[in-house]
Image 1 (cartoon, rainbow, N blue to C red):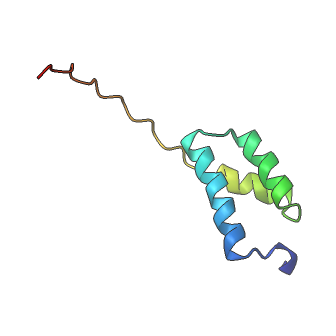
Image 2: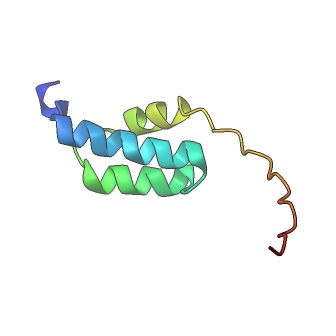
Length: 71
């Protein structure tokens, strides 16, 4: 298990990838590829488990802007 120990910067990077999945910036498949390439010692099953725990951030409705008023 010590082969899987990550330092603080690695954990932060991993969390950033997971955040991007939650925000919809990258797909789960894309994140699997990125994490697998960046952390080759992490088993695919663990990567899948991490990604399965990502909760998508609900998209906010756009608020219509008021028309510009000439001064």
